[in-house]
Structure formats: structure tokens, C-alpha cells
Image 1 (tube, rainbow, N blue to C red):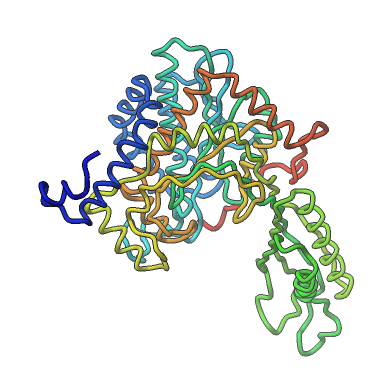
Image 2 (spheres, one colour; image 1 turned 90 degrees about the vertical axis):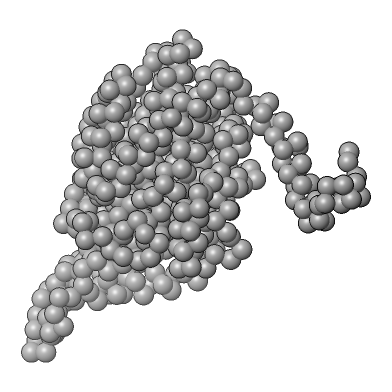
Amino acid sequence: MIGIDYLIRHCCMSLKQIKNLAFLYIVCFVQSPVAAQELSKEKQQVLNEMDKAMETYSAIAQQIWENAELGFMENKSAQLLQDRLRAEGFKVTVGSAGMPTAFVAEYGKGKPIIALLAEYDALPDMSQRAIPSREIDPARTAGHACGHHMFGAGSLAAAIHTKHWLVKTGSSGTIRLYGTPAEEGGGGKVYMTRAGLFDDVDGVLSWHPSDKNTSNASSTLAAISARFAFKGVAAHASAGPWRGRSALDGVEAMNYMVNLMREHVTPATRIHYAITNGSKAANIVPAAAEVSYVVRHPDMEECKDLFKRVIQAARAGAMGTDTEMTYEIETGYFNKMPNKILAEMMHKNLSIVGGVNYTEDERKFATDIMKSYPSDDLTPESAQKVETFEVIEIGMGGSTDVGDISWVRPTAGLRTATWVPGTVAHSWQAVAAGGTSIGHKGMMVAAKTMTLTAIDLYKQPGKLVEAEKELQERRGADFKYEALLGDREPPLDYRKGIE
């Protein structure tokens, strides 16, 4: 080892430069041999091929970003993905589980069957140009504030390049890409799970846009959402209010009781609501009113019990105001079931692929957009980091319809830095970065990671057996899947009228 004194005397290096050199030594000679050992020539060839094809997938992602279609109305976006899959020789089945924009694309034969998930729905009222300051794009009202345009295109890339590997190596196995619409409140994956479309799958690999790179074995919150409709009697609010029965009073009485309930629920509980139909005129006793609720909890059974209490509050609100109440469950998501076996494999490959490196222009974009929100100690270089692997048993944050799949088949997912560090989902900043090369680079990190993980699973099918055993141990021997949303049909019109 060269001494510090030697470096100072003979190489004219400062102490700071020596520290930087020491850091590089640790990175290159401690971390890199592990990565180099794992990155076989075969995998390197796959990554090189994906790099060459990046512009193709970036163009597809950008087109879906510009389409910005809402749930169950993603006609152009779904068609774009389907056309590309057919051109690659995939057999594509459209209209899965009664949803016109859902599809299943398949290539190969035999076991194991590896599934990838693709989303492509946008969010309403999230229009934004691809610039680092708030500016609505007059060409569209919706926007990809959750990055599902990249979700769809990135999974497409993984499916195609996994297929290329299967063909090149002559390996046995099947790759499937599930086109899953309306994740934002429509729950497309729930209907596909309920229809048994994943029953013969051996393992599911998924991902989601984010502001960081991580592949934890983590859970989410179970969720049940419902719409409560109250019916009363209209009357003149001044000349004859005694003749009316206010449906809005019913809604308000329900909300008051649910808000009182908050003191008597476990800390992990989340309950939120929005009055979606109130009074249109103050001088009329409203005959109709509606409120939407979402109840969430890390434990699915407790989530169901909490929802029953919300129903009781709705019934009491109707009784106390002499109105009628009906409710309809809109969506229901299981909490995501962690799978350590698959997640560790995913993390290993994410560490090989690495995070996102910005060009000078991208760094300037990141620096500018980070001025619009608290970023703490984050910098644009934070996008390069791959987070330490963790097993997170208790869900937090949001909910996803991937949860239902994860209780039926072993499932793993990752998040990659498609957004500038510190960006939160469902924000204009997420829309902006997702329409730039920053988003596309993060998308390809996910695509590469899933492709390498799928290859590992084809070569090591015993890992899928272990993952299945873990799933069965976690969910219990007596588990039988029953969708939280019951037997309702997909709400194909839930976004209509708000285009």
C-alpha cells in the first residue's frame, strides 16, 4: 500500500485529494469486484443490447406521457404497447377480465412462467409541461403524476429483452406482460386476480417510478374505498324547511361521527373522505348528497373491521336525519405481501445496474426543480445511490392493486429514480421530470433490473420454489383469495366526464 507521506511528497497531492482517492479505492477495489463477479458476460451483453434500444422505449414512454389517458380510457396507450409486443412475436389477448384496455401478452412455452406488470393510466387535473417550474400544458388536462407512462414502457422493455434472451439461449420458459389499466382508483389488477389470470404464474416482477432506487421486501396499506349516497326530501329552505329532509345533513352527520371515531382507532389507521356531491343552492334543502371514503390499514382484517364501523356511522347519519343511505364499494386493495427471496434477487441485480447519473443539463434541471420543495440533505447526485436492502413487514404510505397479486403469487418490486430526488408522487414535479430524459434513464434502470432478475429465475427455478414456500408461510395454510371489492364489475366509467 502506498503511504500518505509518499503521496504528499512525490505526487503533490493534498490531504483532501488523498481522502478522495481513498474513497475511490473503496468503491473500485472493494465494491466493484463483487459487482464484476456478478455481472457475467451474458448479462453484460443483455445490458448493452438494452442501452442500444433505449431511444425506442423512451419514445414509447414519451408518447404515453403525451397521451395522458385516464383509467379505463387508455385506448391509445394500451394499443401502442400491444402493437410493439405483436411486432416482437408475442401473442396478445385483449379485453382481459372484462376491461377493454387490459391485455395479456405472452411469449415462450413451458415453465417457469414469469409475469411482468405494466401500467399506463394518468391522473386528472395534473397537466404540466416538462420544465422545472409550474406551468400547465394547454394540450392536456391530465398528467402522469405517478409515472405510469414509464411503468408501462419500462416493463415492455423488460419483457422484450427477456424474450430475446430466451430465444438466443434456447431456454425453456414463458414471459408474460400484463397490461393493467386504471391503477389510480380503478383497481384493474384486482379484477385480473379475481379472474384467475395469475393462477399459473410462478413469479411476478414489478416496479414503480420514484425519487430513489430501492428494492425492499416491503408491504403497503390495505385499502377499501366506497361511495355513500344519501337521499332526502327537497324543500324551500326558508318557506318550508320543516317539510324537507337534508341529504347533506346525513353526509355531515356521518362525517362528524367518523371524525369522532379517529380517537378510537389504532395509530396506523388512515381514513380520508371527500364530499363529491353537496348542495347546489343554499336556499334548497338538498335531496341528494354523496361522500367518498377511503379506509386504510397495514392489516387487511383490521381494515375490513374499520370499514364496517364507517358503514355504521353512515347508517346512524341517515337515521338521525331521517334520510336514506346506500353505499357502493368502489375499490379494495390487499396490503402487499413481502417476499424476501425474490426481493433479494431483485436488489442484487439493482446493485449491478446502479442508479441514475445526470448530464450537466439534467443536473441543472434537477437543481432548479429542487428549489420548489424541501429537499433536506438531498442533491441531484442522490439519484445515483442504491438504497440498502430492508425487509419492511408493516406497510406505510400508499396502497396498490399489486397487493392482491402478491397474496396469490410470489411478487417482488423495485423503485427507481425516475424523478428528481425529494420529489413526491402525484405532484407537478413528478409530471415534469417524467417527461424528460431523467425519467427515461430511471425507467431503464428498472427495465434492466427486471430483465436480469427474470434471467436469474429461469436459470435458478429453485428460487421460485423457495419464494412460493415463503408466500404460503406468510399468508397461512387456510388462505383463500376473496377480493375486497366483492363481485362488482369493473367501474369502466369512473373517470368519464373528467377528461
